[in-house]
Image 1 (cartoon, rainbow, N blue to C red):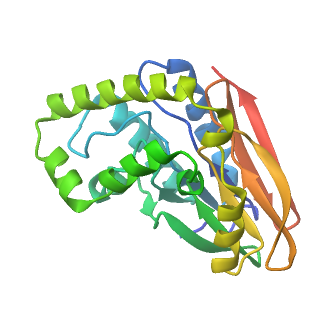
Image 2: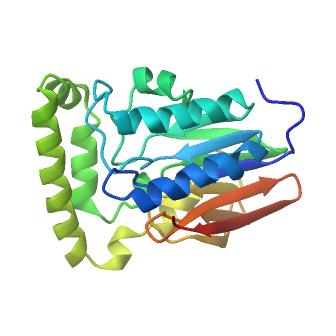
Length: 248
């Protein structure tokens, strides 16, 4: 339950890509959890929270540390919601419970201080990236996930590491516009959900875009990644602001 003493503030984050190999990002996240997040009524994590996720049966101390930090935040009165990204779509109910996160659908709508808002990770908007969309369709299927989860944890980790290398190599040669959202897909999404505001991550291009949807003014807010700084969207009943803090 939300603490009645908390301010009317909601935070959105995405694309932290948490991993033991980037202690600077982890430290920045812990600072955010300790100093900023407790001010909020709600925290929405819109995917790619972790660099990779191979299954809820990975009981590493590092993942427990992150879960404990989120649980502490939740106990302070901040509700935590999670939407899967393209790197952590295998996070399940087991880890969500450990981390005191409420799992949401891959596209959801929320009431944000009286405004009807669409939230998502954002990868489904990048329809020009045909290779990725093909992999996404396969990897979200029940048969693929059942097959992967049946493998030993060590094998899954090797598969994930190999996929990340191949994905990085492929991304390096793709045109930037291919990896950005398709504008018509954004408009279709807002009109399908009868909304004038879309919040997402994935593209690592933080900005507030003014657009037109439903024959009226609309906005698309892109969250920043955490590769070079911490980044979040702060929303109050009267304002929306993209903020950041140094790593470390």
